Length: 252
Length: 273
Image (cartoon, rainbow over the protein chains, first blue to last red):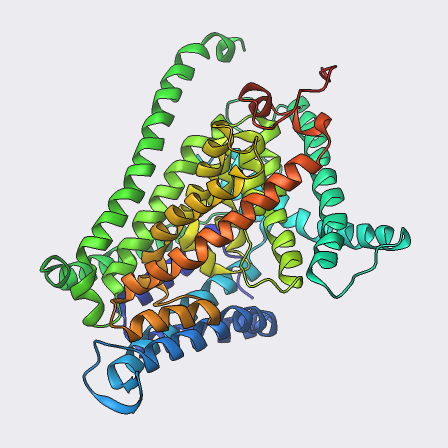
């Protein structure tokens, strides 16, 4: 396939797609963006992961939008059906459709970015810019810590179960078992962080000045140009939306 | 070779002033965005999807959060920076554990509040904002709430500095007040960016207020005033219980805890220096 895209190029693309979709507020465009994200994910072989993660986030959100605006939209004029206080209005359903597709498009685009980006590349790209090096550390450290903590929590649970921890039915006993797992986990993590801080300080983590990286991420001029063009396009979309909506916003 | 050591004092002061300006600019961006959204919302919401307000909310709140991170993060000591990933992991893991008990709250800020109690308001604010940004790698919908998360961390740190964690009954009160402020600030995001709330339970409460004829922002603000203070009172209580369940040797190694006497009780006799 084509050479790897710089992490900033994919990030810029994701941000611009989300901004333009939000600014346009036109549901066919939102659907098109969401479909494009799914097709790109399929080409990278991660459609299953993106769609699963997206469904977990979006299903409650879209259902809640449908119930909220589909049944209760006091501003709606065209009433399609009515049961007591609940009125199904065309405007409400349209509003739910617009917001649902817009959020779906933005979520899928960002999930596509985060599932395709190489975290080491992103961290070294961040270190090369004028971004505080601590930010790269927090990002990389969290992404490596999460799986480790899941394993540690499992070991804590097993250890406490061998000492006689039994999960009961009542709320109090469940909170009790929770305490038996939470306190050792928090203590271990904070203790680890303390020794990590000393090790990092010994290697000059806290000292000011520029950092170098072993890892070089190629950033061809063509991609820089493309990023600039995409940002200008997104800014134009935002400016267009502000010009179009300002009187409506300021009139009140 | 000796240049960095010689020139470090003067830029240090200039950098401090620059950071203070960034902090003020960040807080001002968040406050101005909120005021602007509340003043311009009624006509906008009826005219269709609040795309203009969504852009303003996203731009203003994210700008504020980024400015706060840029101001606070380089000034934090390493011992605090390494705690930020821990806070995020705790937010996620403890949130899931609490979810397994079946309580109807989205308890997702325990780590942030715990770090704010141990390391202070600045660390709390940076932790809250950074947690939202990093967590958005898995769930992009939390990204717009970065400013609200930063506010929770900051207020938790201020409550700890004020000694509200020294009495067990004051921690939930501090959480309640924090929940009111954080809920009100986050309401425009929920209203204009997502058009409601993400959960079905909270969505039902919003629907009830909408059925009474409230505007969307008013309905969501009222819903936030019902669920957020309760939620944050629980989060603050759990964070306080955890802070006291940890050994003294661990909690008193934090300069913030020693300096402002955040936790009740005496410091351990022999400081581990």
